[in-house]
Length: 152
Image (cartoon, rainbow, N blue to C red; front, side, top):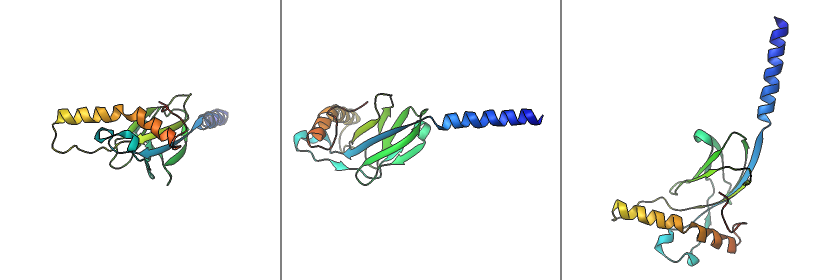
């Protein structure tokens, strides 16, 4: 009986050691922008979003961004999705892949458009989301981001 308990304990400790060793490091930078639908994106300014919260699968809090909007997380290999949020901004969701370990995120305001119909609000939100590739290129040109295109 004692041998069986010893064997099970040994196997369990080896199994937990193997699982805990399977992690990956995800780094990134988070910035904010204005509503692209309100004007020309070439004149837009970006700002760092310190304190942005990063969640994994099932709302597991993984960490926060520092005062420069940068983060570095050591996540378990079983975390497949990230959701990054900040107060007053539309949350961004990512599916993690093996090819991408550095995320560059632009937040857009998550505000209610005053005095418009729900249909028009939906159209304006879609227009804002469609402008994101241009905003990424602008952030790259200004030296804020390292890539022209987002890693998604």
